[in-house]
Image (tube, rainbow, N blue to C red):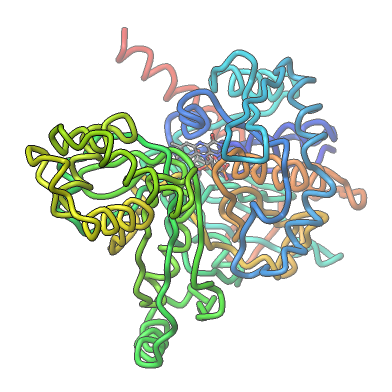
Length: 490
Ligand SMILES: Cc1cc2nc3c(=O)[nH]c(=O)nc-3n(C[C@H](O)[C@H](O)[C@H](O)COP(=O)(O)OP(=O)(O)OC[C@H]3O[C@@H](n4cnc5c(N)ncnc54)[C@H](O)[C@@H]3O)c2cc1C
């Protein structure tokens, strides 16, 4: 008798877990509540899928419940960069590494440059291993009974029928971009088993800032350094925060502390200005700290440095030289060729210089002011752009309740977790997919291990439900649904 493993969620982590569990010879069933598998995977890396990074240092991974990163480190040591590249190579996906000037690591994409080739390879391997997929399937409740060895047998009540399972892997994603299916419903099941959560926060998204000038520079892209400044902790705010936490839903366990946040963070790269603030990789990298600052009620600003390759002294000298050189021209020439035009006009106006005035009349004081602004325009940050448009959800299932070498729950045997649902999030650059592959591979392989021979009787009485072999019924329903869908579209 084969071990049956049910996986909830057909995203990156669920697909990896399905293949690894299938390789052990287990019978694998994947339940996906949307109408298609791997929706988010198709959107990754702007449709090109940045599936890992050559630099997997722990500084690129974050967790509220694993601040010293021992959990993450242990997991990555058993399935890291080499294993990921080899695994995808074995499926026919050759890596192509792109390096960006501002990053130590190399972003790894499939040589095809298409995320759909990654999804196709994963699906085809899963099909080869006879993994069954049920889309449009959601779990209404789970009951379990313990056998004589204390190991549970799960009974999942789904809209397609009742499904029995020896192991359950929950890989239902976080709350980021719910239109792709990760709507947070995957947190409900672990909560029923007594698991705890750290607060969910949007990460890897644009920042909403204060400033009417953003309307004038919308669409401009420019290499910048962003420095995020967080105000020191305030006792009054901490008290309000504590009260809020007491009143928050029961499943939010992790209490955010002020010491989880430093007072400055920096990011460098191409910033995209929008009509409400800043976007692009540097803004994305800072967004998890902005989310934390918002939750902790700490004031936050960014210092925008639009001349990141020059030190302040060099810039001052350059501006004085340009004032001398263009003394017989209009002020709109002063920054021409240094910055995109819209940005140059915005900075001239902030320094009190009219583009039509003569350069000759710009005072030393104004040059000093302009130099200071170009190296650090202080902008107040309201919040991130929220879950609807973020790429990652920080927070989630408490890592202290999981075994990093198996991804098995410490509270319930045969219950495993994988992917973004766990309280681990990564920087931009392939780290979040890497976490999905790492945790998915570990969970799938561990769930597939038959710990002992089981010969179940056909009928089990349980407290809440009666065990029957109902999977064939679910298949029947699914087939009928498929036929109806075909008839409707014909
Ligand atoms: C636009 C965008 C671009 C990105 N680009 C990159 C990138 O280039 N590189 C990178 O490393 N990361 C990237 N990420 C992040 C990365 O995609 C995610 O971290 C990763 O996909 C998480 O995988 P997962 O399997 O844990 O969750 P998901 O991919 O979210 O999959 C979860 C699956 O579970 C299903 N599900 C949810 N609840 C239930 C339920 N109750 N029952 C059944 N099924 C359920 C969902 O429908 C979904 O199919 C990007 C994210 C976005 C949104």
